[in-house]
Amino acid sequence: ACFAQIDKVEKEVNSFVSLQKEAALKRAEEVQKLIDDGTLSGPLAGVPVAIKDNMCTEGVTTTCSSKILSNFVPTFSAEAVLNLEKAGAVVIGKTNMDEFAMGSTTETSYYGETKNPWNLEHVPGGSSGGSCAAVAALEVPYALGSDTGGSIRQPSSYCGIVGIKPTYGTVSRYGLIAYGSSLDQIGPVARDVTDCATVLETIASHDVKDSTSVERQDTDFTSALVNDVKGMKIGIPKDYFGEGLDEEVKKPILEAAEVLKNAGAEIEEFDLGLVKYAIPAYYVIASAEASSNLSRFDGVKYGYRTKDYEELHQMYKKTRSEGFGPEVKRRIMLGSFVLSSGYYDAYYLKALRTKALIKKAFDSAFAKYDMILAPAAPTTAPKLGASLSDPIKMYLGDIYTISVNLAGLPGISIPVGRDAKGLPVGMQLIGDCFQEKKLFQAAYTYE
Ligand code: GLN
Image (cartoon, rainbow, N blue to C red; front, side, top):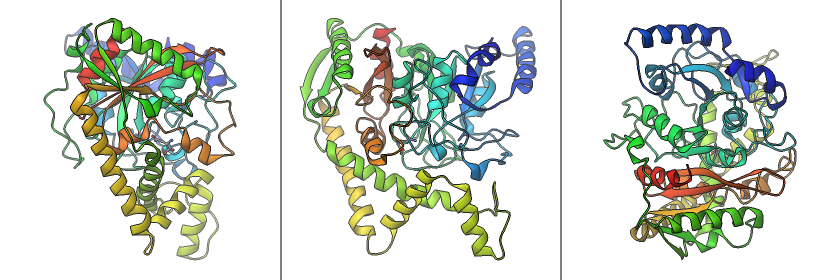
């Protein structure tokens, strides 16, 4: 059924970088046998899934939507993918993304842009735009995305689906090709809250292969799917609802807040503060880490190597010049600059201090509130091409998502309405570290 739908819509939407039809159908048969003989059961057994193309899949090309990894076939699978496979999931393909997850529109992919299934003239958001578009276009029931600064929540919001970025350390990053390692987290995108909780429960695991992985005893997320928000305290940051937030986004979110209030939650406005420092701090830290992480792509160990060179340094230089796209190069240059001697203290250290202050601001909010209710993005999905020419404008669009990564918190995006054009609006619920269950419980109100 998935492949039939893919045949119908994929040409227009372009959610996938690669499809593994033959392997998937074969695996589905094997899984069916295990289900029939009683060896395998559970909600994900035999259910198809798509994986963002920055997660390694053994024997299957993993490109990060970059030319430099166009021929990279990993010899191992990411831990999150293995966890799904253990539960009987069937991987049907690898989804498109912004190159190396740098971007907010899925337009920086070497393999062409993905389009928003609700309106093909608009972007699906990014960087997990392929995963979110695939779910919204009914090509697959759920997918994995990754979120360094909003890349699960923002495209989920643009595509009208549910996506959660878990607390940092909940899902192993082993086999996730690193962008900003201190911020990256894998998470599910799906059609509803129940599916997201089911998938997150399956992929969350303590993993010795990821030193930042956390041992948690409370990952039975589906147990939180109960209709009860009575007495929950929810804070609305005033500084998130002022200038810069589109009226067409604001209205459905405030209406959705009323729904929680009518169900018995206590809603209160407060000042979160420091909001304007989040974007500069994030782009300094993420680019610094990216410049270091991406130094391994040099034409020697992985992927693409330039055809035409005479000596080693020229080979490095030409490989990287030809292999990376403009947005990735911009980040590598920015990151190398803020880490260089003379600038390190002024930019990188200052950004780390800002990050600590942002965490503190959230800590004092969570001393008062069970969760924070916010937009996922200031607008609905922009038109294709509108963001590419103005990177700073695109960076500003991350205002509501990136501080959640800087503080390591969980955040879920749920669809709450549509703009006049029919494009979906997403609302974000942000929890304290390890409070995913509260988020699922509140989000379940809309199911
Ligand atoms: N838009 C942000 C960036 O470009 C977030 C990307 C992400 O979460 N991977 O860095």
